[in-house]
Image 1: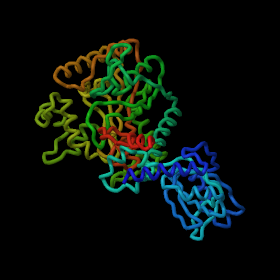
Image 2 (image 1 turned 135 degrees about the horizontal axis):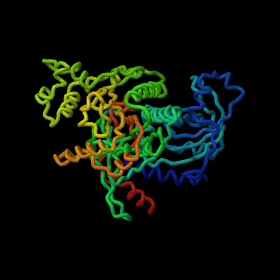
Image 3 (image 1 turned 180 degrees about the vertical axis):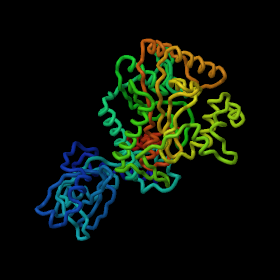
Image 4 (image 1 turned 60 degrees about the vertical axis):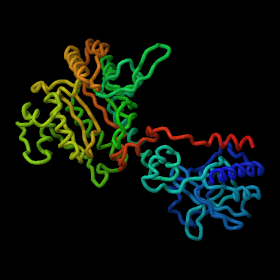
Length: 499
């Protein structure tokens, strides 16, 4: 069936060439995009479209309806469609013959004027047709059901054609990133770029991807985070820096995790995690408005309010959201012996985080700022002066998932070396995600880094929330998938070309 269709389309190419058109045409100068026409003239009456409004538009054919000496079709461009009307006595004989052999999916340009049909639909009365590109494969109908999910991700180009709402997700994603850039630059931040291949990976507890540099003869790691490089820049006097970066973590895949993902990471000298709390609230409120027009968004049956973030300590959250009987008191949660009885993790700090992730995190639906983390799970954060077993760190959680992580940066090189030693000990105990020793980073701190606050915001997860997308793969244009089997199209085209 597919072979027969391909043969028909290849014959169409020969027919198009016989009419004097190129099957893969040349530049086309359009006067309007289809969304421009719909926005400017969509509400105009037939009388208001006179005197005639000439237009040149182009797009992909999504429907064709031929009726003897005339026909209608719809062109798709930038997610919107517009009807065209082709009548035999309004175009040249060659152009009408071209219209008669067009297939759904072909890309054409047309020239004519706007009018309304008898049914009132805004349309282009065509006076000239130009052929721009031939489709050799059948276009999909609207995707239906979960069985098409992997195909949608693998052939995202077809997904974007068939589902306008998918295009809207990525338009909003672009708005979200632009909003962050605009708001940070208004506050004096500058955008920088740091290495994606690193001799030592750091800045997060994660397993890396490993690659090899042939010329230098060394193994390198794809970055798990840009943090240690950005803090080196703060040492160098770039007091407000940010990077919108791709990170790579060799971990599992789920609806909330993809091995390659996008983060916004920014650092501000002479502030701390309290200052970043206020800044985060301003940024998230504004980005929600810029992306959706409102501080309140719908996500999977919940109304998430980014207008104001609730603030809670981690220990208080464990008490408030405890699941089951025997709700603990704050005093119990502060007691290492009590923690040991309720978690199998090796240290009191890891036990506290374990209980938080079990009992509280899944229930944090509204955007919530959770602060004060234990030192064992925060090797790059500054201690709280009054509670040295805790650090000045917070996470922002919404819909039960972390979307941001921030802290007052540890700028004491002696303490940083001790923290790295603790992480090395954890690696020896089998923790593959524990941090490595980074001597050059300690050297940079030894030159003096001002008090600094730093934060990372997960762009992909935030886009999920602001576009009501259930899976992280829905907000990544080309998510990582297992390789598919041979497609066979190249061989088929080679055989057809030889004939």
